Image (tube, one colour):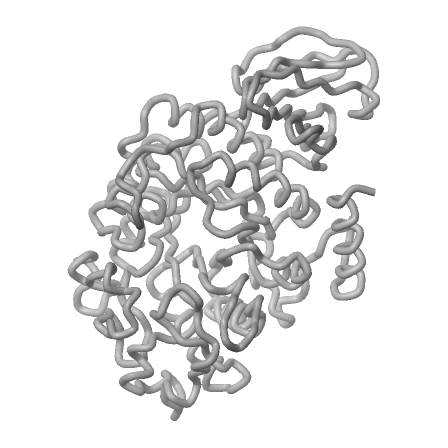
Length: 470
């Protein structure tokens, strides 16, 4: 048994011991147990949208969000793209200072709940929060989302602000030893206390009042802190239950990765999507790493719970620079971008575009709007890695159309030179003549029998549909 298959066997045993299963996947629990209150409305298929982080880091402005939303409505919405997500540090007037522990200049209401910085989001003035921006996004037929960090703002603790609906204050609920390893914006919350849970309830009620449809909760699904939590189960469950209590359907996306595989049952129960890896940027080694992660997580993908291979760093990114990187367009080649979209689609990962939408070139727009490829991500079934990479190069994934009448096959070449990648009918479990269609080229290639092969460029991929002939 290969290492990847051994991992799956161990995980299956974990899930059988800890969660109700059906067909090898975690199934929905009752709302009273903390499962999403709207299982028939939350992430039936992998969410598709835009997130501001790759392009703007933590200092996106309202004008930029509106411009990206307008572009999505005009060019992407008809293909299924619908979420507009404001990421990271929207409450800091000066985000570049946000990593300083001394920075207590933050948008916040009298109950320690974060508010958008009005110098960057002027429509939030007067305590309106994100409601005006959410209303604009909704007017375009799209859905609105925000990024939050786990816990309570350090600024709220410094001022010992009251917790809405209780007699407690920030000092009564803070868990100062449960900090984030890469941001000093927040402290953890002790949700074993009723007032700690009340703080999360008050946050969720505020977001619901704004019209939020999607919450990306960071420093949740992977942790490294003095308290020793590697997966912040108590606050994940408290947040999901608080979201349920609002009466508003809101998707919960958990970051960062890698989410521990041992927590697959819990993360499937309490969230709709979660990260497989840490931040993935526009370089081949990080894209290549996702092959192993998608293979390990494939069995946990299903309606209402989707392992997330991370945002798509395509087009114009790092617009204001990032770390020691200058503003630039993606460094992935066209073949590498095709590989990324093919793998994400075969793994049924959420598709969250990270680049600036209004500046997309025609090639990238076509990559994001191929309806036959998007149908694989949104509607295929039985997705799995069929052949593990041989000599570190080729890999083959398979899936089926929803009606089960046809097969999807993805051929990958992870090597440095062009290579023939083949799959045989016995490997696919099919027989007879098969009509083969190239989904990226959107053209029929002909009828094949016994096997199919294509010459795939280095770091490239092909995606095909096989339909039995009468």
